[in-house]
Length: 145
Ligand code: HEM
Image 1: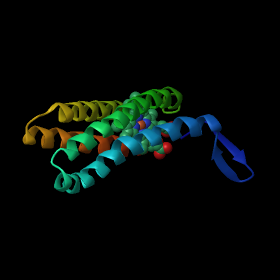
Image 2: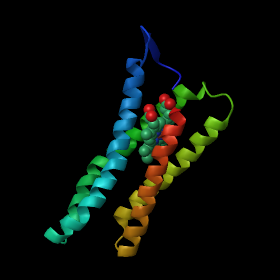
Image 3: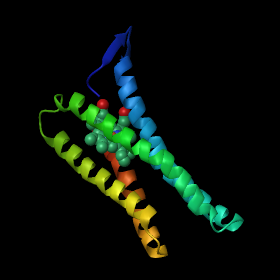
């Protein structure tokens, strides 16, 4: 992170706007990625309680995860605009392009996962969404440097 840094004595701290931008981005990632992992852990126990319970949990999670995804895209575009100028070599831009592609796969995977009716479809698209989301998280940390 190159912008929005203030020096307080010898301590380097991010500015309020940077905290807002990255804080909201990380909050979105926590809900979108962390929520998928928590849901995965809860499904077997929920199924034992009632066969319909995993579906109910998934529908409830979608009400949180899609706004979190929208927050990730909005704050991600904000970060791209702010940070792009500090990375003149092109490698950072390539990494950002790869990340945008991976985010698109995560979104499509999650959408197909919730629309699938077969067990194989649910498993395949769920795994696609989860792996792509983890990859987006790792690429984000690379971009942040
Ligand atoms: C599944 C969706 C996404 C996840 C899980 C995700 C996750 C993350 C994480 C964990 C970071 C590191 C934050 C830090 O260490 O301070 C980050 C940084 C970043 N992300 Fe994302 N992100 C997502 C979507 C997007 C999108 C759609 C864009 C652009 C359109 C984007 C652009 C960026 C940029 C430019 C940074 C670097 C910010 C900086 O250095 O100030 N992200 N992302």
